[in-house]
Length: 390
Image 1 (cartoon, rainbow, N blue to C red):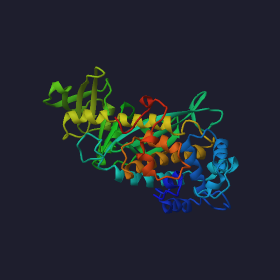
Image 2 (cartoon, rainbow, N blue to C red):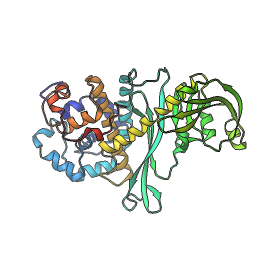
Image 3 (cartoon, rainbow, N blue to C red):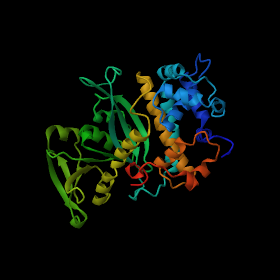
Image 4 (cartoon, rainbow, N blue to C red):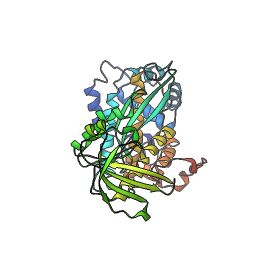
């Protein structure tokens, strides 16, 4: 990297701007725009994510405090609260959603052979879950959730290899988690790990028909008939490995084929866990180990809520909320890309903290991430969530 550039400019240089421009043209993002383009909006919102800005006025004051550096940061439009608010309200959020998918595709290639994933399988492993972001119903009347409470849900499909989100659907809080299976297109040969909220046998059978595999927790009142039992080593925590068929009228109608039922005792929590899967080839212990890795998606939710601006929003319209969330996801993925390309062992939290206090510095990113004197913070790192230190 050119040390004459600011850290912010070097971070943005990892972005394929031609791909961004293609999305802007597709959705006519700059139509009849004389100043403050979509690129200016993206840069300002990225700056806000990297430096934890609290409001649009906060963004305006911080950026205009360095007027001589704005042009070199790539921001050519006039930064004002009004321009930012109008852009977030009017510019199509799909520009940033589709551009985030470009970054996600790049990140997945970089983390394809990530050695931190301990399960030795050639299949792609996904964890599916949703998290709720509470909102004030009087300010966000479109985000209905409870009688006196608003919320949006982030339905996320996380690639366990690298903890990269590959699919995100933003809905109101009223949409049940299981409904996301209707819009999800399963990949043949991939594993989908889910909790009991997604237990709908008709939808699970659709995954099977698309040649995908699922691992999901079973409910206690599930009715079934055992057709085969396999030997297990109970010293590993396994209690049984069975082939079953559902015996309930509606469940058998929704899933007419056989299933595999694995019971496992977790010594850490002293709980009995029962898993269902349509894969009959992998070892029973691998089924339990794959489900244990589902918690990576929970860790991802906690991480982005703690370290990115997705709990408080700069605008109240659906477009502004989705724009802010997708730009936050882009920043998360971009930091993950930089971590891999700069070949640093620092976790994402540390990298983000270093960037937050160094955006206007003119030093190479590599030097910044390898200089031990720049990596000391007063905060108690034991309380932080580190995605790459599980």
